Image 1 (tube, rainbow, N blue to C red):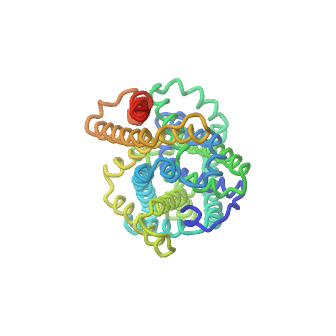
Image 2 (cartoon, rainbow, N blue to C red):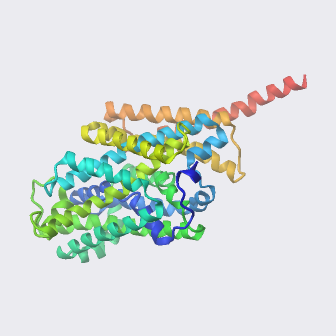
Length: 439
């Protein structure tokens, strides 16, 4: 299907591909969330965002594999282990992405509200832009996002300069490394491990990697993306620190409004044109991530072969997906937090079957179809049950991290199911069948 969903050929260069890969993870959660954490924790608040960059370094290992195979994980697994595995992994991915897109709509609308645009109007505009950008050919999308992304980065760097924070930025890498021992081990492991594992199987990235001109382009783009995201993570954290040191942040300021407030202060307020432009550039990360998510959701729908692929059908499916995200965004509240945690459940459900596929692909060991199906079912159920348990009883968290709890339980049960079912088939069922045949 992937050859049909987009008519682009493999023609993306390093910078075009890196722009798309950065936009696939550089959202408002990345930017505003990092500043929010850094305001109270210092530069160690950049841990999650830096972990995304580290995830792209890990993705270097799979870049050639993705570029050669082209198809997304659910299609690869479905072709090897059956339609039920394809549908299961595809639906887990699709559900997890709805919440991610809803968050970009909510955060983008909150930022635009600072310059006087009503939230509902902003949400509708952002949803429409997500839909339009997701329908653009990949090469054209990369040019659009490259210009917008560059503008956003320049505004942030200028703001840091105005705060006299460039020296703080220069010290940030060393201070980040020395601050890690101050974070609880469970949090460090949970954030770094889960984030890296997620980036490695994130189809928002894979959909662009397959468009690289060659393997070398895919690999160098991943490296450039990693460096860029790590630098942006340190930049966002440093801005919050520099603003705190300069004493410009009101004590009652909502932590999530740290970056918008800094930009407004640097540009002279939201009443001035420059202030409006500066604040508006914060919507750029939402556009890139939101359109990437919507593109993957649309692709997933057609991969599951629910409808035949036509252009009119693609527009319809994209519109339905963005309407679902818009509905959740308008309702807001705990629903968004719940759906975001499905990302951890998707990671737990998909990784073990994918590892089984890779072992088979590289001729290490071939697990049976039943073992992989059983692993997916048990892993998905375990992850979802642990997710619901944590939401009802937060004290059920162990290892110091809710994400690590979900991942360990989900992947642990999936691994045990895979191995046990394989042993039963090889040691018990196979000899019994052989004996029956001999008789």
